[in-house]
Length: 130
Image (cartoon, rainbow, N blue to C red; front, side, top):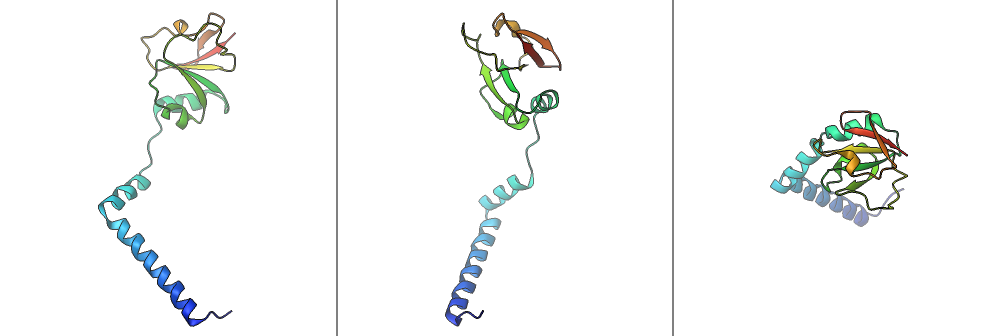
C-alpha cells in the first residue's frame, strides 16, 4: 500500500515534531522531576504491609486513631472506614472484620461498639467479631 508523497511527508513531519516535543519536555526541569517520579516508586508503608499480609483480599478495615490519609488502605489494597471518635450508637459496623490501631496509646475498645470484641493478630491489627 503506497501513500501519496504529501501524506507521507505530513505523517513524517508530525512524528518528528512529536518526538522533538517529548524529548525537549523530558530534558526540561519539570520533565526531569516527572521522570524521577516514574523511576522511583514509593515504598509500601509498613502499616499497609501488615494489613495486606494478615487480612484476606476484600476485607474491610476500621482505621482507628489514624489521620484521614488514605494511603495505608490504598497500598494494602483494602477498603475501610476511619474512626476519629467512637462509632455513633447504632452505627452498623458488622461488615468490618478487622481494626487497625495507628496510635497504640489509644484503647481500641473505646472506639468500637460493645458488641465487637477485638483480638490482636498482629502488632497493630485486630480481628473484631460480634
